[in-house]
Length: 308
Image 1 (spheres, helix red, strand yellow):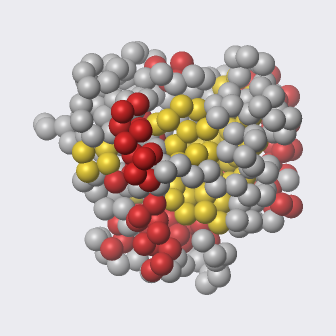
Image 2: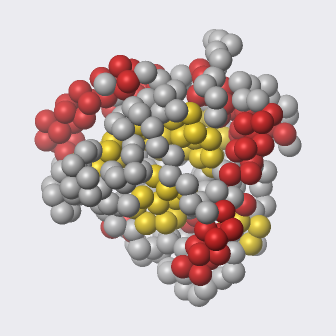
């Protein structure tokens, strides 16, 4: 079968325009939601939406208790789903948080967030992946430029660009502590990567990514066209970004930590197939394959949204 998103072939391939809609509700069945036409158009243009102070800081504070509990659970800390910073021995990421924490699970089903995501993806969704990313002061490593979809397509078998990531700030995200950077408009192109995917690449890539990083020529071209943005704000701020938007973050050189919650929504009509890289599927805590069921939206209230 013809590969629609060829990547990691061992040779440099040219980037090409995306093949899928950005706002799927415009092309599938019409799905009403809380986002205005202006917000939908901004998401379609930039590949992300930013909500400053979406939740109160008090709503975020209890998640630090979750982190402390995880750090004290030796069995969990020794498991593959907890990633340790190789430089410091501190937590870097904890995956499948929605299965570890009832509080996190309820947050992924917040009706305001689900309403927006369902509107963007044009229907029912499930959690493809969830995690906490931590960057401790003076020592938090960065993340190289990448498209999540390129990884999820190649290593997880996600067929189409029909997923949205939600990032919630647990701490202040400022210009000094390694905020997430995005290239607006980069989601409009698929950028193939060159290197072949080694077996169990996820073990290395979750600590330091080298496979699945776009060519610097393509990155420069897209950044020159769309610039680079780094949304910054207080705890409780929310970033929604399209699965193909190129993003990265610098190391945290400040004394202040940067902790964010991430949960990825995938369309129920976009289930995973065999990985396109030819390697075995990654673990379930990185890519949900079993027990897929749409998140409950039966009691969606008519909440107002902060300005984007």
